[in-house]
Length: 160
Image (cartoon, rainbow, N blue to C red):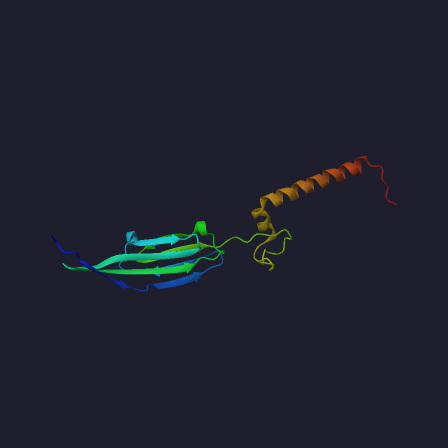
């Protein structure tokens, strides 16, 4: 009968670098010695991004040492949670977190929080993102043009 091995854990804090861009934020987690299969990336329904990993450092006859880490980050509502993706390459875990695209409120010049819309968002871009609004505006413009042509042709109005 073989005696069970004693397992000890070495917790470590990986180097993390944030890069913030206009359209997305990027997180690099430096994990030298790790393989992709030893890592786990999850987004919980509570809005927490959890990154963790374990790897065997040393194994002897009676003892084994496992290196592990666990990081948690809150994921704000500013990100498209379903579009967050990760890639592991050369010991670095790359996470890309695309930001939400700003939309126009009913007033057209404010976001839901009452702040002015970003100046980088052009009127045409906003209309393209809100295709239904653009379609309604085009239909209204066509109807007004038709009514105007009808009035001009068939009404006996005189402007004095």
